[in-house]
Structure formats: structure tokens, C-alpha cells
Image (tube, rainbow, N blue to C red; front, side):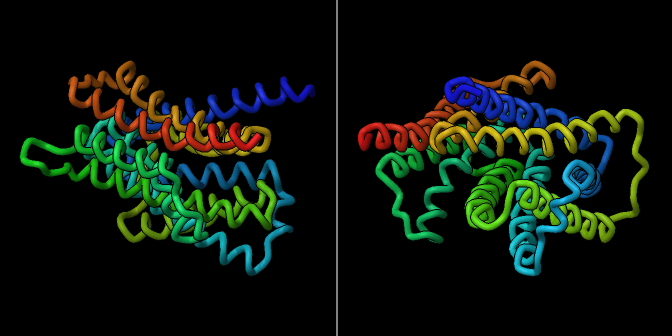
Length: 292
């Protein structure tokens, strides 16, 4: 394929992944009325892990003890991130959940600083300040208190930022099939443990089957695969910028399919968070162009 067409296809794959993730917020919110959070996520990641095993059986042969240990950490971060996000979604709206989750793009540079010694640039500091302003507009009440669901979602964005940093480390040694299998597999193990400790397996009602298939095969497996393929042929700054539109898609889908309505203050907060994401990603693009 011609390099220009390949780049366009890669960017389209990233945008499609963001759209699929955005739709997952509404589907998860609706399915929480049918299945408990632990079991919803256990079924979701079981489907994703089974699909990877069937489609890429050779990935099992590339795993060693070190990979399993590192994968446990990566899968643990993924498990905690999705778990906290799901509980946060139960206490807030899909639109807020989507925008606050997208703040992982802002937190990631600071985690890189702590783990790899790469000091954040000025644009990262400006993005963090703008994100905090947006967080206040979206989540703080008149008594300057943050809701429980919004606080959990903010914590989930930090966990996802940690997962991104861990993913960078693991991808240095393993191919994408092995990385997908490790993180999905360990997340499945962790979710089944907490689910079995919380309650007996609930019956899967017919109305939940479609949602589980979407969350497990589309929003988890397909979207992550599209992300991986897209990032392979797209500069990191451009890739993160495209993936950050997940928040916009989540907000739009929430308004269309869930009937969510937003106040002017909340919309201003959304604009601040989106602006923070754009600043944190456009800055590296500008520096790359200046060097070239």
C-alpha cells in the first residue's frame, strides 16, 4: 500500500477505535441495570481473551515466566481501571464518565516523568491546569464537593495512564498478539476472582447478550486491535489526539441513545477538558515540526 494511503487508513483505524470506545460508555451504563459490575466485566474480558486465543493461538508459545509476571502487572492496571470506571459510571452519566476518563492523556506525561525521568513540557503543565479547571466545572457541586461517581472516574483515568506507561515497557519485548493475550487474560482472571467472591454467577438474560458481545468483541478486542494497527503507522502525538476523541463520541452517543442533557456549566467543563487534551497532544506535534 502507498505510504500516504497507509497513513490515512491508520488514522481512520484510530478514529474508528475512539468511536467504538465512545459507544461502550452508553452500552455499559445500560447493561449495569441487568448485570452486576463484577460479572459484567468478567464476561466482557472472557469473550475478549477467548477471541484472541482462537484468532492468534501462536501467542501462547511466545510467553515465558518474565512475560507472565509483567503481564500480571499490566493486566492488573487494566482490571483496576475498568473496575473503577464501571463503578464510577454507576454514579454519574455516560458523558461525564467519557470526558473524565479521557484525562489519562493529561496524566500520562507526569507518570512518564516519575518512571522514566522525562520532565513534562510547558504545554503539559498548561494542559494539567486547564484539565483541573474543567474537572471543577464538571464535577464540583455548589458546596465544592465532588460526586462519588466523578471521583471514581478521575481515579480510573490515573489507572489508565499507568496502563499506558506499562504498555510501552511491555511492547519493547513482545509482539502485539502476546501483549493483548496477557493483559486480557490477567484482567479476566482478576475479574473472575472478585466476581466469584462477591456473588454466585447471575443468569445472562437475552437482552444482555448483545451488549456483552459488543463490549467483549467490539469495544474491547476490535477497538484495541484497531488502536494497535493505527499506532504502528501514525506518529504518537497524532495517534493520541485521534484517540482522545473517544470523549466526544461518548458524549454524543450519550445524548442520542441515553437522553443525557448537559448544562452550560458542564459544557464549559467539557470544553476545558477537551482543550487540555488537545494542548497536551498538539504541543509535541509542534515541537516535532520545529525539529524537522
